[in-house]
Structures are given as C-alpha cells and as structure tokens.
Image 1 (cartoon, rainbow, N blue to C red):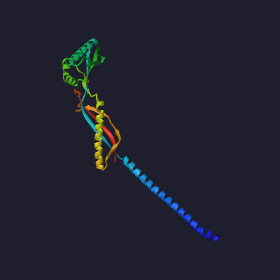
Image 2: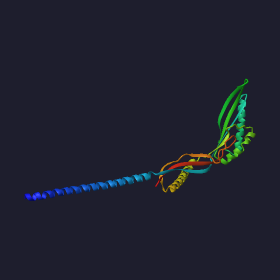
Image 3: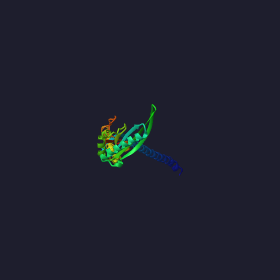
Image 4: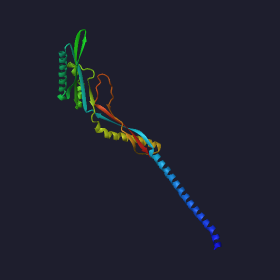
Length: 250
C-alpha cells in the first residue's frame, strides 16, 4: 500500500497543476476577449459620438413684399399773434380748413382727431407774442384714399394752412403675425438648401436640426428710404427675416 501511494502522489500533483493552469488560461482568455470587445465598443461609441457632433451652421433668408394696412398722417401747424385770442382764432381757421379738406376726400370725421396743443410766449423789444401750435392726426385703413390725400396736400397750403416740418404720412404694416409662420418656414428651407450644398462639397449629407435661432423681422420701404424734407413714406413694404440653423452632418 505504501508503494502505491508514493507512485500516485506525483501524478495527483501534476493533474492539479494542469487544472489550475487551464483555469488561469481560460480566465485570461475571457478577460482578453472582454477587453477587446470593450475597447471596440468604446472606440465605436466615440466614433459615433464624434460623427453625431458634426454639424454646420448656415443662415436662411425669407423676403416678402406687402402692402401697408394703416395710414397715419400727423399735421402740425401754428399761428403767432400779439394776443392769445388772435393766435387761437387763426389756428381754429386752419383746423376748419383741414377738416374740410379730409371731408371732401371722403374720410369719416372720426378718423381725424386733435392729438396735441401747445401755447408759448416770447417777449422781444417790449412786445409779447403768443404762439399756438396744434397737431391733428389722421388714422385710416383706406390706403388708396390716404395716398390721394398725400398727393393733394398742397391744397392745404392754398387754403392758408402752413404745414410745419414733421408733418407727413406714415404707412404701417400691422399684420406681421399672420405671415410669420410661413416666412420662418421659407427661411428654414433656404437654410437647409445652403447646408445641403455644403454637405455635397464635403462628401456628407444633412441630418436633422441641432439648433435654430429665428432672428428678427424687419419691415422697411420696398424701394428704400430716400430721406430728406418733403419725402413721403410709401405703403409698399418689404418684410425680411434671417434665421440661423445648425444642421447635423452624417
């Protein structure tokens, strides 16, 4: 029995060492595969994250011609005399002439209202003079009639009304909210077209919107503002909006 034990003991030890080695090799192989897979997934994730972060920033423009829907004409006039009653009487005559002028043109009476009055005095060489200044404002949605009134404004001068500087017609477009959604869509479409051209040149394609900024709307005279004394506003307006859009590239 003693001889058999001595012969089998080395074999048992060798078998145990062999099993341990196989276990370590298996564990090492599993760890190696896990590290390779993890590295691949991490690298692939970083690549996809980097690709997802690629974007291009472009601007889109939308323009539209519109007709003003509100006309506002402020008429400023004054009279000076050595007594207040005379100055006021002169202003009252001008007021009557202005009302008659607009009535003849067919404007409703309530569309013309007084919007300001001022009385000042000046004393020179012992004589005090009174100046009465008044403003009348016409507000009308009849744009064609308002244009005719502007073309005939010299009739007021013929009636003795001296228009002060600052008197003039202003045309306003008040329906911006009604066209905003369509214009923003047009500007975004224009921005996408620019992004697609950029993507074509760089060998990529355009994805969804990453970020967008609408910008602001501007309403200006369609034919530009010449400025200067006596230049009337125009009812023909140009509405403009610029959007800034970031598109993903893929």
